[in-house]
Each structure stands twice: as structure tokens, then as C-alpha cells.
Image: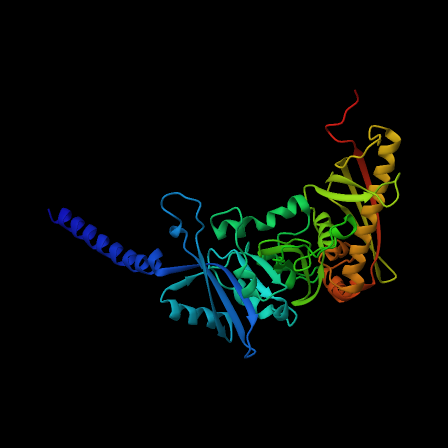
Length: 408
């Protein structure tokens, strides 16, 4: 009898303890007490402190009737001495606890990135709510202006837009997935350098002032493209860093070269010179056959980097009286493709070394094989020697006619 009574008392006490433990966490983590941030923007304020912008959204505000109405987003900004202080201030203002676990994008203005953002990156990566997969964007405009114009055109939720906007890099190569996790790893790495997505806002003019011919399409980048229409955010090109300081930008074709070297593009469209017609171009859809083969030798103290890439492709554009089934013609187009890709990849690599001195390609990881120990590699100071590099690029491509064009 006493044994049964003791067991019942123990069960009652256990239930009470569980209720007390979970009631507090429920009260704290209840969604009604949280304010979810989907994006952050970081600028320099007039007081030379940080201006931190928080973009909130309320998915439940989408029309309950199931219409295509977009869930509205709200942006609040606060001047603060640090990110942590800004979060504390915004908590006080909105009366709810800010939650960063669903933050998809952190945008820095070009101005603050040019001064160095290591303090901000370390603070953010140290926050357990920030996911390593959060994208880093360097905006050509203010970060707040960029967030204000980040509007989904074909999605109801801004969170969905932020999740997929960098995915176009896999089939265009004109942007790349650049996360805070990768940025932090590159920041503390002695054999590579950080990079971020280059952001901007499209021209809202009703007439295009940008270049539209095949020579200039590939030199576009955010805030300097031929896109026009509704004023929305765009993400074309990459921002290049030397340690934590912004040192330059890559346009669309240079970003394609970066994506090729990182093996992050499944296929891409390029326009190569027509071997049989002056001042004319042929559009090709090119697919990598293998990952780029990279070898790095140290000759007389200088890096000598060889890159070999293999591609297959097919002709996209058509013209009258062009015999795209002729083997000689296809060989000439393949050679033109080889020359074009060798040219742009070589120019890109020399830009990263001579002009920017930033090994965003991670060639230093391959160069480590030339040293007996890791300390020997560190003593070599790869980050400074990279600017002296020489490059040799070889391309092997096989171009075929369009899949709709066959022998009759």
C-alpha cells in the first residue's frame, strides 16, 4: 500500500516539474513572442556607427482565401555601435524577441565592405541563430535600399525568394552561392580569400540605356546592367575580398569563369566568334564534362598554375545557309569555342592575381602539395605571392549541332 502511494506521489511530482519546466520555455519560445527576421542590412550611419536594417515578414498575413497576395515585409533600421547592440535596441522597440534562425540574407553596403567587415562577420558567425548557409551580399547601393527593393516577382513569400535567388548561378554562371559560412572559412584560411554576391537595384527607366550587343552582354554586373523595368534588386557578379576588405568586383563573364573553376555551373550560354563570318557570333550552350584539372608548381619561388578544362556543347543560334552538320564546320566552331574560353579564363585569372591579389579560386590549397609541412607553406606567404602567378589554360571542347537539327 505504501509502495503504491509513494509511486503515485513520485509521478505527481514528476508531472508538476515537467509542467513547470516546459511552461517557461513555451512562454519564451511561443511564436507570438518572437519576431522573425528574414534579412539584415548593414550600413554606416551618419554618426560613423552602424545602421542596421531588419526585414521582417508575417507569412500568416497571406490572404486566408488562398489568393496570390504577397505577404508584406516590414523594414526597421536602428543606429547602433554594434550588431548585438542593434538587436537589443530593436527588441525594445518592437516588444518581441528578435529571432535570426530564418535570416536568409545579410547585405553589407559597398561603403562598409571597403573598410573591412571582419568584426561583423565574427559577431554573426558566433550567433547560434545565424545559419552558415545564410547568403552574403555586397550592395552597390545602401543595404537598406537593396532590401527595400528585394521583392519576389513570382513568389508569395520573400523567404522563398531569398532561398532561390542565387540558384540561377547553376545554369548561367553569372552569380554564385556565397554564404557566411564560406566567407568565414575563407577569412581564417591562409590559402584562399573570401567573396560575396554583388547586389544592386535595376534601372526603373522605361527605356534601356545599357549595352545589348553580344560583346557587352557579358560585361554587365549589378547596378550596371541593361535590365530595366520595375525597380527590383538584382544579383549579378561577385564582390572580391582581400582578407575582410572589399578590393574589387567581377562582372558576369568573370563570375562565369569563377563558377567554372569552382565547378558550380551545370551549363552556360556563351557567344563565340563565328569562324566563317567577320563581326558575327554563334551562341553555344556549353556543359562541363569534368571538374577543372589544376596543377600548381613553384618555379624559382613563383607560382606557375596550369588549368585544363573539358566541355561539350551544342549550337543554339541558327543562320541562313550555315551547314552546321558539316564536320569541318563543327571543328572550326569547337576551335573558336576553345580560343574564347581560354581567353576569358586567362584574363580572369590574371585579374584576380595582378589587379586584385585575391585567390578566391583557392589555388593555394593545391599549392600546399609543393611543401613538406604546413608551416613551410605558411612561411611562403601564399596570399602575397599569388600576385606573381603565371597561368597556362588549355580547353578541349566538342561542339555538335542543335539537337533539333539532324541529317535528312
